[in-house]
Length: 400
Image 1 (cartoon, rainbow, N blue to C red):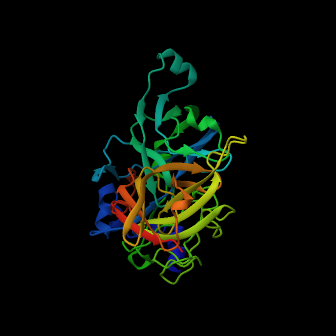
Image 2 (image 1 turned 120 degrees about the horizontal axis):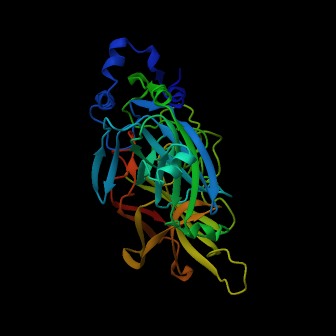
Image 3 (image 1 turned 90 degrees about the vertical axis):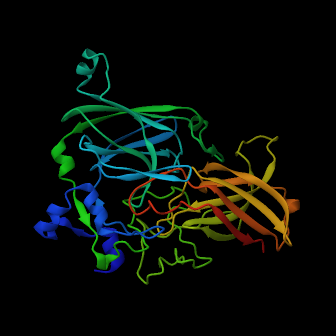
């Protein structure tokens, strides 16, 4: 089996492992022992878990889907401080919510809360609508699902549950032809039949050492969990930084498919001029000058604008990375001539990215554009990402 085929399949089924190995790995934290000293950056985790899609619903211009899998550890981030959220005996499952724009499939950064009520509708009415569990989910990043919202939760035994998912107004600025509904809250109800045996029976796959476990690389996405824009499966073809060469080659010599054919680059359209790309740690930054209508309103008063746009992506799977704080400077012959913060935006054409307006009269060939990561993305990380995307610093490209 070729290495990338193994990563796409999630490794070797545990049924092929020895009984002693199975016994020793039943504890969630025992999996950590398979990668004793993970590298500083993206790496192949020791296992991959099967996921079940519970259901999906739409409201307020968003498609909301609910998924569950086995409880597992993850790492939260507050500023630059990372903390491990370990599995507890009371946890029954790991709950995940995916939120996207209905029309384009672009991720919608938001605050997501869930309320779980046990029992049928009649039972819920009888007990006064008391909830079994209510929480704000962590915004998260995983190698197989990309950006989502999740947490480990405890339920009150098997049976029928009603999950209400409330999505707050988007925390990114919607631009282009996106519905204004995204700037308002939305709520959906999704029924869920909880069966502990089903969760326990979900397949857990072991990644063997000879298939890349613990090495710089990533498991492939489950289905279509990319950006939802033209940027969905793009691999940077302008420079080989070890994160991909634009030909489906991740630097290891094997073919790399990411849930579909390699697509066009971010901003591969009229009005966008690619400047270049650079990295801050494992954050891949694609820098573009965009000439466009700022918000896509069709009226005579809407002026054409020029913006500096930066698409920030993960290596290998090219997931968009929200919830970071970025700024930019323009320098000429070593002297700064402009500086400003980048705002987080979503666009059905170009997906999630960061941008700031810029006066085109300021730009000249040879100028140096610096992208500064001031705060790392405030995302919880699943295993394989917990040591990545923690750096702050600067990446530079030259305007040709």
